[in-house]
Length: 188
Image (tube, rainbow, N blue to C red):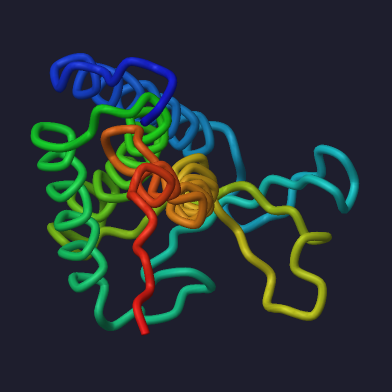
């Protein structure tokens, strides 16, 4: 068992909701500022080649892949958001899972908001991207991203870490169950 008392479902849901709203607000606010203050598709150096701003609108997924099937990304993001809400309401009792899923949900909702509300239209809106770090993509096509993307990527890595560590939604660990099982005697 975990050494911490599991959260009540309402507490986990509240953590998830608050963090999602904070990330969504930060994402949409920074996109608003980028649209108001940055020139379109012109590099604005912040820290040389380490950090640049470059406003663009992404009709596809990462590296603008899948531009013709934007609606698919919208449906996948909506399904992921619904899955997180269902988990929050039914299974999550771990603080770690609540934090990670809340931040992930906020990132998903940030880009989903763009897909639903921005031009060219419902379900196919272009995502506003404006952060460019050329040093990160040595040998790969250059990526331009936003706050929502940062939370989606880092939280998916965090999900993978929790899964690899065997942390369940209730905060217990798989290894705890194995240690609690009685040893089985072998008979020949």
